[in-house]
Length: 155
Image (tube, rainbow, N blue to C red; front, top):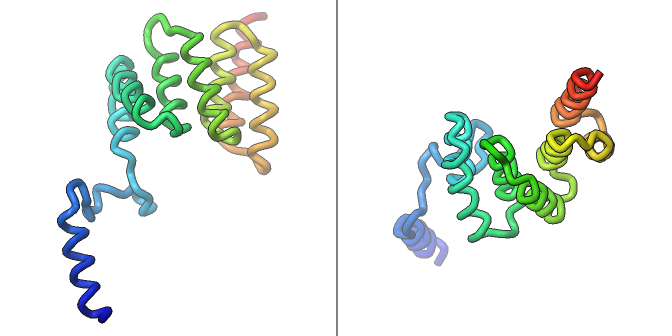
Protein backbone atom coordinates (compact mmCIF):
# COMPACT_ATOMS: atom_id res chain seq x y z
CA UNK A 1 0.00 0.00 0.00
CA UNK A 2 2.77 2.47 0.87
CA UNK A 3 4.42 1.88 -2.47
CA UNK A 4 1.31 3.14 -4.28
CA UNK A 5 0.78 6.13 -2.00
CA UNK A 6 4.28 7.58 -2.18
CA UNK A 7 4.36 8.11 -5.96
CA UNK A 8 0.86 9.57 -5.77
CA UNK A 9 1.81 11.97 -2.97
CA UNK A 10 4.96 13.04 -4.77
CA UNK A 11 3.15 13.65 -8.06
CA UNK A 12 0.38 15.56 -6.24
CA UNK A 13 2.98 17.75 -4.50
CA UNK A 14 4.59 18.53 -7.84
CA UNK A 15 1.26 19.66 -9.25
CA UNK A 16 0.55 22.15 -6.44
CA UNK A 17 0.80 25.67 -7.87
CA UNK A 18 3.67 27.55 -6.30
CA UNK A 19 5.27 24.43 -4.84
CA UNK A 20 8.93 24.45 -5.54
CA UNK A 21 11.80 22.29 -4.51
CA UNK A 22 14.52 24.45 -6.02
CA UNK A 23 17.57 25.40 -3.96
CA UNK A 24 16.70 29.08 -4.43
CA UNK A 25 13.83 28.65 -1.94
CA UNK A 26 16.22 28.05 0.96
CA UNK A 27 19.09 30.00 2.43
CA UNK A 28 22.56 28.62 3.09
CA UNK A 29 21.38 27.02 6.34
CA UNK A 30 18.57 25.22 4.53
CA UNK A 31 15.86 27.42 6.04
CA UNK A 32 13.00 28.50 3.79
CA UNK A 33 13.33 31.98 2.31
CA UNK A 34 10.31 34.25 2.65
CA UNK A 35 9.82 35.94 -0.76
CA UNK A 36 8.22 38.98 0.90
CA UNK A 37 11.21 39.55 3.18
CA UNK A 38 13.60 38.79 0.34
CA UNK A 39 11.96 41.39 -1.92
CA UNK A 40 11.82 43.96 0.86
CA UNK A 41 15.48 43.33 1.75
CA UNK A 42 16.51 43.82 -1.87
CA UNK A 43 14.61 47.12 -2.01
CA UNK A 44 16.17 48.22 1.31
CA UNK A 45 19.65 47.42 0.07
CA UNK A 46 18.98 49.79 -2.85
CA UNK A 47 17.65 52.34 -0.33
CA UNK A 48 14.30 52.06 -2.10
CA UNK A 49 12.43 52.70 1.13
CA UNK A 50 9.11 53.35 -0.63
CA UNK A 51 9.40 50.10 -2.58
CA UNK A 52 10.14 48.10 0.56
CA UNK A 53 7.32 49.88 2.40
CA UNK A 54 4.87 48.97 -0.35
CA UNK A 55 5.84 45.29 -0.27
CA UNK A 56 5.63 45.16 3.52
CA UNK A 57 2.43 47.19 3.84
CA UNK A 58 0.69 44.62 1.64
CA UNK A 59 2.31 41.76 3.58
CA UNK A 60 1.17 43.18 6.94
CA UNK A 61 -2.36 43.59 5.58
CA UNK A 62 -2.50 39.99 4.37
CA UNK A 63 -0.65 38.46 7.34
CA UNK A 64 -1.07 40.75 10.38
CA UNK A 65 0.21 38.09 12.77
CA UNK A 66 3.74 38.08 11.30
CA UNK A 67 6.07 39.91 13.70
CA UNK A 68 8.89 40.13 11.16
CA UNK A 69 6.64 41.86 8.61
CA UNK A 70 5.70 44.50 11.20
CA UNK A 71 9.33 44.87 12.27
CA UNK A 72 10.65 45.34 8.76
CA UNK A 73 7.77 47.62 7.75
CA UNK A 74 8.56 49.90 10.71
CA UNK A 75 12.27 49.76 9.87
CA UNK A 76 11.68 50.88 6.28
CA UNK A 77 9.25 53.58 7.40
CA UNK A 78 11.90 54.85 9.82
CA UNK A 79 14.66 54.86 7.22
CA UNK A 80 12.63 56.68 4.56
CA UNK A 81 12.31 60.44 4.22
CA UNK A 82 9.99 62.18 6.70
CA UNK A 83 9.04 59.07 8.68
CA UNK A 84 5.65 58.98 10.37
CA UNK A 85 6.99 58.07 13.80
CA UNK A 86 3.55 57.22 15.18
CA UNK A 87 3.25 54.56 12.46
CA UNK A 88 6.82 53.40 13.14
CA UNK A 89 6.05 52.93 16.86
CA UNK A 90 2.73 51.27 16.08
CA UNK A 91 4.39 48.56 13.97
CA UNK A 92 7.38 47.97 16.25
CA UNK A 93 4.99 47.62 19.18
CA UNK A 94 2.80 45.24 17.20
CA UNK A 95 5.85 43.12 16.33
CA UNK A 96 6.71 42.99 20.03
CA UNK A 97 3.13 42.22 21.03
CA UNK A 98 3.28 39.19 18.71
CA UNK A 99 6.84 38.20 19.64
CA UNK A 100 8.06 40.03 22.78
CA UNK A 101 11.56 38.55 22.55
CA UNK A 102 12.10 39.67 18.94
CA UNK A 103 15.68 40.93 19.05
CA UNK A 104 15.51 43.05 15.90
CA UNK A 105 12.28 44.79 16.89
CA UNK A 106 13.65 45.56 20.35
CA UNK A 107 16.84 47.02 18.88
CA UNK A 108 15.06 49.03 16.20
CA UNK A 109 12.46 50.34 18.65
CA UNK A 110 15.32 51.62 20.78
CA UNK A 111 16.80 53.35 17.73
CA UNK A 112 13.40 54.87 16.94
CA UNK A 113 13.25 56.29 20.48
CA UNK A 114 16.61 57.94 19.85
CA UNK A 115 15.15 59.56 16.71
CA UNK A 116 12.55 61.30 18.90
CA UNK A 117 15.15 62.17 21.56
CA UNK A 118 13.84 59.72 24.15
CA UNK A 119 17.08 58.18 25.40
CA UNK A 120 15.41 56.83 28.56
CA UNK A 121 13.05 54.64 26.48
CA UNK A 122 15.96 53.57 24.26
CA UNK A 123 17.78 52.44 27.40
CA UNK A 124 14.67 50.50 28.44
CA UNK A 125 14.87 48.58 25.15
CA UNK A 126 18.57 47.97 25.83
CA UNK A 127 17.52 46.45 29.17
CA UNK A 128 15.03 44.20 27.39
CA UNK A 129 17.76 43.05 25.02
CA UNK A 130 20.06 42.43 27.97
CA UNK A 131 17.46 39.99 29.35
CA UNK A 132 16.64 38.43 25.95
CA UNK A 133 20.27 37.98 24.89
CA UNK A 134 21.53 35.98 27.84
CA UNK A 135 25.09 35.77 26.55
CA UNK A 136 24.99 38.91 24.44
CA UNK A 137 23.91 39.44 20.84
CA UNK A 138 24.61 41.83 17.99
CA UNK A 139 21.29 43.65 18.53
CA UNK A 140 22.29 44.51 22.11
CA UNK A 141 25.77 45.62 21.02
CA UNK A 142 24.40 47.76 18.18
CA UNK A 143 21.76 49.50 20.30
CA UNK A 144 24.30 50.12 23.07
CA UNK A 145 26.61 51.74 20.50
CA UNK A 146 23.73 53.83 19.07
CA UNK A 147 22.90 55.11 22.56
CA UNK A 148 26.56 55.93 23.27
CA UNK A 149 26.86 57.76 19.93
CA UNK A 150 23.63 59.66 20.63
CA UNK A 151 24.83 60.71 24.09
CA UNK A 152 28.25 61.75 22.72
CA UNK A 153 26.58 64.00 20.11
CA UNK A 154 24.45 65.62 22.85
CA UNK A 155 27.47 66.71 24.90
